[in-house]
Image 1 (spheres, helix red, strand yellow):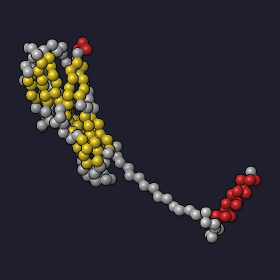
Image 2: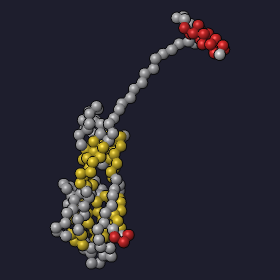
Image 3: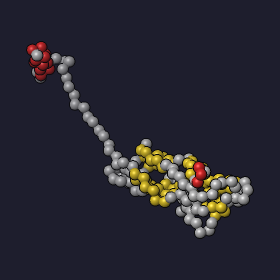
Image 4: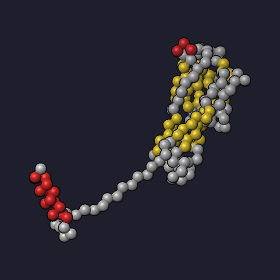
Length: 176
């Protein structure tokens, strides 16, 4: 204990004097941080293909676009039941105002149906609101809502198992 007290006393003596040796100097450092609010994503609308009739032979397609609430286009023998509801998915992204974010959507996902049957959905290249973008507003406040609209396409073969299908996909947002 005597040695450490002597070392502290010696250090105070050498560096504590106003005109101490050249090796005893100090300087103040600075620190900075910018704090962002967490990004939030809210699902407003579900991607719906409605009720479709499989083709009598071969394969056909159904496409939901990203215009408005999502128009349905069918081809290759696929038909739509007129009374069924279809439309694109819609999401709201909110974060720190005036900040750059990247928003992405899964390129494809699987919908599962009866008896282990599946359908693969390819999200359309027309997906709007994705990629790198700068949120509106200003630092220190929540951004206005950034809208993300997702459409998709499916291929239905004439042998597709009938029944209800559902699946999930991811919309991801991160600060750049």
